[in-house]
Image (cartoon, rainbow, N blue to C red):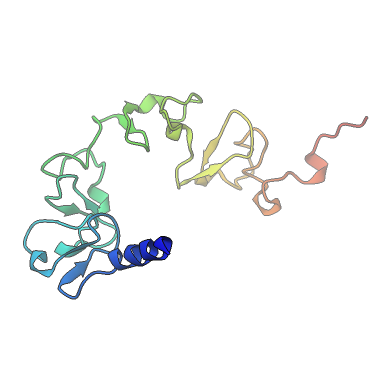
Length: 170
């Protein structure tokens, strides 16, 4: 019976009261409607101050900035949280450290989470081989940029047609 009471309390905590504003996600989940549009971001999402869903909310919650201003080399947040690394550096996805851009996709994991070796959204991930990521402009261009040619065999799910495969004939 105690379990049902806990479930009910959890559900109640996820619903804002009539005098509260629902922040949608993050902490706090709800804020007083008196805190809406008061010039201070109270919701993690920034929705209480009218921040669009895809904008970056500064760590000190002083402002929300458009995505194009995030990591553009110029601090737009008062606390510079939109520029966590020095120019010419890459921030590991887990936020643990910044590494020199020359170490980005160099074949060695320099970030504890390995994010420096992951392909970006504008790259094709090779199936196997030392070359792991290829710029989209090189995909299906007639040249094997991935060692296994997977950038040229997308229609086959990245598999080379049988004529290009090597068999073990034993």
